[in-house]
Length: 292
Image 1: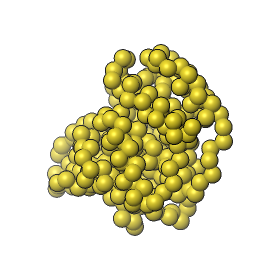
Image 2 (image 1 turned 45 degrees about the horizontal axis):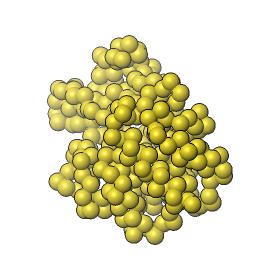
Image 3 (image 1 turned 30 degrees about the vertical axis):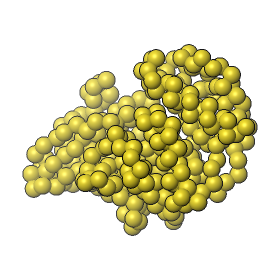
Image 4 (image 1 turned 90 degrees about the vertical axis):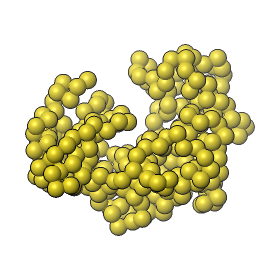
């Protein structure tokens, strides 16, 4: 779906951004955005910014809330060690751009999702620990599960229906008691920037929440495991525990794995029949074994 098809006025969006950073010399589309069109802007005097245009459904329908949350979170994080962009301007209702829009500073670095060596995993674990140490003056919303009952359907590519049925039974029980903290809520390699072998930024703050720290840990570990294998995902979890001495909460690992399933009739996260299916199922099987 093109930007024009969902109501974006490219010229108006650019003019809105130019009110903040000055005349724009170059515009470049950034890859990796699932919820939004992400544009890298460079002004004639060298200022750089990133423009989020919330163009993709179903997120576009909640774009005012999502972009406002990101704006407020980035403003709060400016006084912390977390390397987040700084909010520059917000058009939450899309009055200027046609869709909800958020303009923020450009951070150095690039996505490096291929990194799964111990040093890189330790960098990721340290970054997440830093996020969890933030204590906002105004607590964010409570976390939302991405594994609601609508997703409790045995995936057609699975050859172990009993495993998934047992996972759904786990989620039908109360989550374990745990201390809550500040969460990124979509912490994973696709949202981390790297520069010269070190973490240089953490982006995509639209889902910021509060809840048990292991929600973020589980989501990153699953994301790593899907790409690099179970051992890499578990090594990330181990390194986070070494940094924080956090309690392992497998219930949230089950919640996270089920959250990767599609809604009935919805888009699957994976290529049909691809190797990612097996890795996701293996992670669930190992987690269920931990639960007993």
